[in-house]
Image (tube, rainbow, N blue to C red; front, side, top):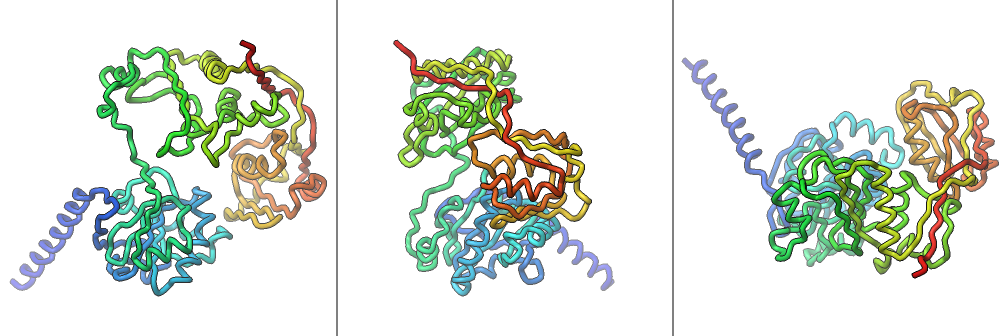
Length: 433
């Protein structure tokens, strides 16, 4: 009898836990500034006691929740600064890193990544709860919570300053810019609606053959530059679309070219050159642009983009072929000396040291080598290595000194030379009216 009673109690207890868990999942709603963060319990928290975190542990002290992921360069770069802030105010401030990535990958990342191996902040892994409570699409995404558990601010990664931390600790008003990734324009409240909006709302964009928009800087939108692509679902499905928010004119030319135009691939006068780059300090010559076309021919699409630029800015733009100087990466043995020996993945860059082990060639070439030289010349890969080939590369050299770099590359049977290659060349002139 006692055994049956005990089994029944255990069953009811477990059933209650499952029911409570399901209820909590169903009741998750995003929090906004002024709301109170509920006390929750998490597992899979690295660098924290036994891996189990009860938010009650943070009661009475302000908390900053920092959402991040391993491929967010800004997140990783700012982590030591956030760690030092927490250390400075250890008895007055809590910081919780939070990522959707699994525990084993995060543990390995902290061990192998030179820049953050000394960071001691606890990190919640495999998160599915906090990211629903504080929904976002970009990182860093930081939530500031006061000592009473009230959400005081939601920001990007630029607000972690001594002054702001002290204001959070003291309970003073923060008045920080709100990072709202879910901000949407409510078309129904605009009154007059352009035809393209009406078509999208009532006809899924099926009547639109062509639509383009060009405007200035828009508050509340990020700096996002997309590439031409087919709309897969929703409004304008099947159309070819390209969208840029808060970018410069140079970025539009680069999209037409499908790659960056380097300074020695552009010919224009100084006044046009200034308009190409824009001025972020006062938002001058920073634009938003969108093109939607039912015709999916990419040549026609890019021709229309070029016409939009010329007609909007009273220019005449011409893209031709011309021999220009480039940095050319060559290998005497088709890159075989670079192929990884298969050791554990590792990478760090510090000073003149560039250390990569078992890293895909495309990641090293596109993210490191192409950005290490003076950007006046395009960097061309002629090693014959496949993009996903894993390579090892260890260099200690001043990247402003090509001879010194080549001396280090010699052991890999690789060298970088300046040679001419046939590339697209952009000529821009003011239009004569």
